[in-house]
Every structure is written in C-alpha cells, then in structure tokens.
Image (cartoon, rainbow, N blue to C red; front, side, top):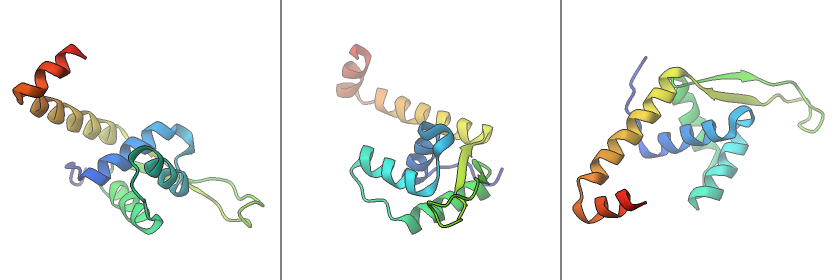
Length: 112
C-alpha cells in the first residue's frame, strides 16, 4: 500500500465513501461533504482526492451501468478497501488519544 497517512480532506472523503455505502460516486460525495461539513466541495478537487486515495490502495472503484438520465454516461462508484478501513480506524484512534491528553477536554469526553 502506497502511503497510509491521511490529510484532513482525504479523511473526510474516506468517511463519506464509507457512509454512502454502495452509492458513493463523485457528485453524491460532494453533496454529502457539503451537507455534513458545511464546506463547499468542488467536483474537480474531490475527483483528484478519489484518484489519490485509489492510488494509495485505500479505495477501489468500478463503473456502474449506463443510464438514460445521464445521457448514456456511467457513474464511477467507490468503496473502501481493508487498508482504507484500517487507515480510518488509526486516524480516529490517534485523534482520540490526543484529545484525551488535553485535561479540560478529557473530562468532557469521558462523561459523554
């Protein structure tokens, strides 16, 4: 696997792909990112990140069927790979460990 460290936006894209399950294609990913982060997600940027994550082996993709609605164009669907899931878990664990080291926040985290 090429490079397993995640940037913030890479992590958000991976989380979004995981949340969308079998409906993770670029436009849906952009929509979800905007809905849940409040950040505008440009399609070109999301495409670049998806390609980079696939090169790293954290995602894999496949083309869906052509539809009339899209003028015969096919959607490319993305799913997490096992290394992608592992990278997300490691990222979450590292963040949680660091948050727990901050005394004023660790009390709030342990109380829920």
